[in-house]
Length: 300
Image 1 (tube, helix red, strand yellow):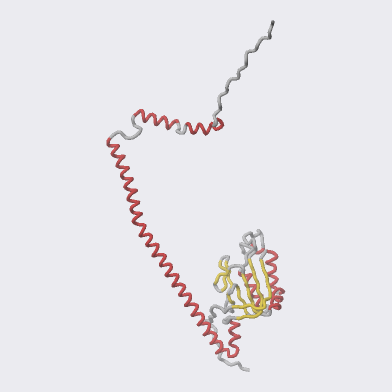
Image 2 (spheres, rainbow, N blue to C red; image 1 turned 60 degrees about the vertical axis):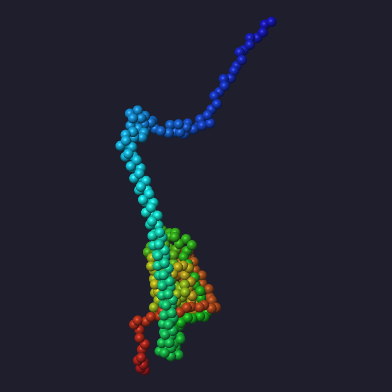
């Protein structure tokens, strides 16, 4: 019987298991050969010449030992000095804190004394106004800002724009010398206050600072100063007067229209409302250096 020739069995050659790090050949090479070949050859030459490793001569060993002892001595001395100096530094720090506390307390005492003297000066000014002004002394004190006042009036709040740091290029206020068009400036507050006076205000404050005939609204950098005292936004202006009438007259005035233009064109935030009762403090000090009361009687 004839059979078909049998094919030799096909055997699959077992494949070598691949290394888990086969895909990281560069990293593996770096880890296996961490020392550069040039450094390795130099180390081998020094070892063959007998110049590598620890010194073999007695003098070299003594020099190395002396260097180590010196280094240890320097570290020990430094640590000892730092330990000795630590209490001194702590003592100086405590003395400085005590001096700061003492000077702060002295400054607070001086501020209290200034407040007492200011009250005394105010009382003397009121007495002088009564003496020289007769029945009109209290009215003169109110108009001069020497007396605290209250009554109906208006409350006007002026604040920087929400995006005051983003000034547009070629803007009218920027070309007038303003680096930031969204900020309220001293000249803006000057116009607001003057507009309130012209509209019938009898007394005005900005952020609690009473304005008098001697008050000045100026700028120091980006800050607004009222009588040399810096104010921060929002600026709250209180004015005593006929509330509804004062508000209407101010809004219709040129200065009120100017404020509305600031709101419309530059985002300055404003609000005004009539109030049934506002209270304004007296000015910190009303000092007259030049004016004198007139004793001459008028001639008809």
